[in-house]
Length: 103
Image 1 (cartoon, rainbow, N blue to C red):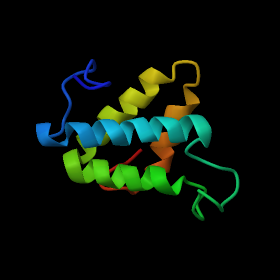
Image 2: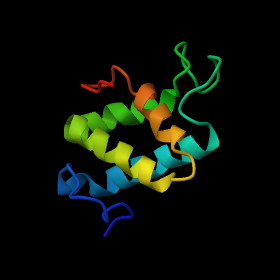
Image 3: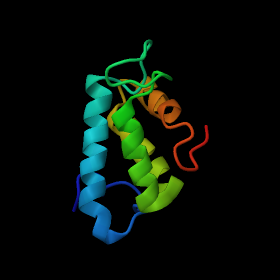
Image 4: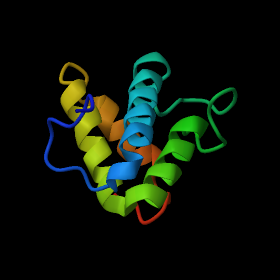
């Protein structure tokens, strides 16, 4: 059982479980270390001040399970960061225009 399998049934194919768990772990680390948004572009952030790698992860999650997997991941990030609720909001905005993600 993966680290995030305690949530509602995951919307991705079983063959992708390990990859999804790795991506979600990485996304969690990004959020804790850098946040998903910045006040200024540059470094890990694009011209819209969104974390570049977090957007790449969102694109891969969309490929694996569509917007349902992205929302599932958002729920994981939100539930794992109860002390910092704004982090999930930042992820939501970071992913604008990734796949079918809409806020």
